[in-house]
Amino acid sequence: MARTHLITGAASGIGLATRTLLEGRGDRVIGVDLHDADIVADLGTAEGRAALVTEATRISGGRIDA
Figure 1 (tube, rainbow, N blue to C red):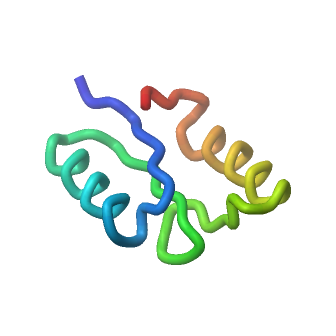
Figure 2 (tube, one colour):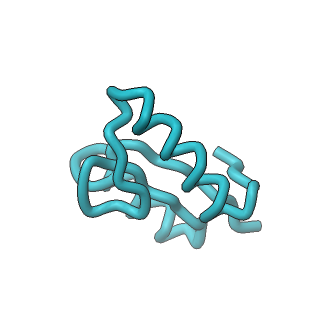
């Protein structure tokens, strides 16, 4: 069964590698980063964190497994 994952730092490095691995397994990934992601947000700010929650809920339909 495919799962929905939310990954921060998904545009590069370990986050991108994790995204690639999970998508290769057939899972859905919602990526979060400062650029080049499904959700573009600065998690170092309260506004960015609020945007993450709002957008992740909208994109996932309210279901995130990991």
